[in-house]
Amino acid sequence: MGRIDSNRDGLDRPSKRMPEPQLIFDRSHPGRIGCNVPVCDTPEVDLEAVLGELRTELHLPEIGELDLLRHFTNLSHINYGIETGFYPLGSCTMKYNPKINERTAALPGFAQIHPMQPVETIPGALELLYGVQDMLCEITGFSEITLQPLAGAHGEMTCLMLIKAYHESRGEGVQRSVVLVPDSAHGTNPASAARCGYDVVSVGTTPEGNTDLVDLASKLNSGVAALMLTNPSTLGLFEPNIEQICGMVHAVGGQVFCDGANMNAMVGTTRPGDHGFDCMHLNLHKTFSTPHGGGGPGCGAIGLQHHLEPFLPVPVLRRADRSESIIADYNRPLSIGRVSAYYGQFLMEVRAYTYLRAFGKQHMADISRHAVLNANYVRARLKDVLPPAHDRPCMHECILTAEKYKKENGIRALDISKRLIDYGFHPPTNYFPLIVPECLMIEPTETEAKETLDEFCDALIAICKEAVENPDLLHNAPQTQIVGRLDETLAVKNLDVRWWPAKVTVGVGV
Ligand SMILES: Cc1ncc(COP(=O)(O)O)c(C=O)c1O
View 1: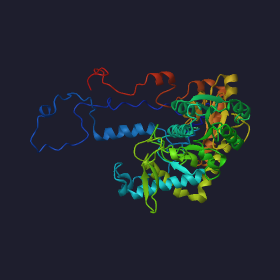
View 2: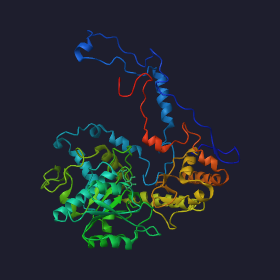
View 3: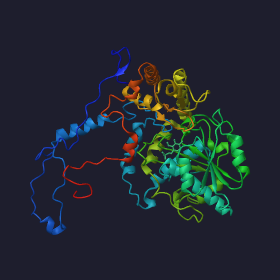
View 4: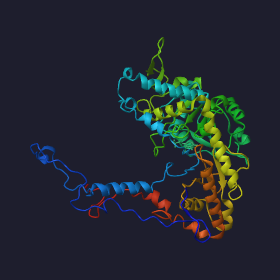
């Protein structure tokens, strides 16, 4: 796994930096082409006369087929993904997406359905969607599921829209203007609440890592619309007071939303619908092995209790009265309306269906058990060099702190992560949750073998030794990639991802 050359300096050090790749334009030579265009055997047409003014210069690279192939193949080798190495990006559940999912999603009967096809012609697709809904109801313990939201954050927002519609239907829409969010929450939680027009009030965390019940009680009143609670929390801990918390919020008429992005720790083992939650979102692109799509296309399916059902987004898939066929029901007067086009990300549902059926009810719990076991193994192996933020068994991810290296050696969590790249590993999540100083959030997922976890832990142990003995190695990392340490602020603020030939000014010409 890691590119470690252990012969130098007595320390495990990475091999030398990769050569900087050229752009396809740098490889361009006038007149080279990569394909044979057949000689035109139809009368020539004056395109300009037919189409109007045409661009004369397209600034396309001119390159032969083999060079083109090598260029993009070599570029692809610089990419890092779950299929090239360990990807412990906490909170993101970067689990392996089994290839069988792709096989089924590519079946022409699924892949070639047109989204505007009359529903009568797609009974198989509706059965599949209904099947996913059914299985997710069983897994979460909720009576209803909709697959329409396209990302986790979108699912959060849809849940809050349902909660808002519910309060409005009871004449309490104006009065309930506050959403409570724990200080450990993912940033999308307060963002979703604010997007729905709510004021966000933060709830504290106890030193043990649980929701602070005293703080929660002091903020509960008849102005509270909902509490958004992540379980297991982003601290990787199961909230032990969950039923009490739900009871407290319900006592003042509020609703409790479960951020279910961490369902990989619970799938097949316990059900949020049984804990007292009113609704939750799931990330199918985490727990149910559909691909993460760089911000989409994902699926943030939501589950809800019966009292929120009238407000579900349309269309609602249900079995038609007196018949076995499934219909797409748009006749829903209290619905919040549409939250996505058509039926959501259909081919993601095909992948999730395949995954769910491959495990089946009997083996579903293996997912969460192995995810939790792997995280606790990493936690136990690293505890002497990187202590856990909370000294108790974790769920599917372990939250460690590098605070002592910052105090004693001037090394930050970010430096450790950058050095991990030199050892051939994708870094874990840094600085989240915000309440843990110099935080490293490691989520191995269930699909990793013990040998991989050991190689990763060995690398981190070696890096922590370097942090003490040779801190500059970490300050200057990574040294093995095509670029070194980037100015991350500049990279975000000054995005430059487009190539222009020197003679063309941006915004003019091409
Ligand atoms: C705890 C938690 N909640 C919500 C989200 C949002 O999910 P998405 O990225 O699909 O919008 C994430 C994403 O990483 C998360 O980790």
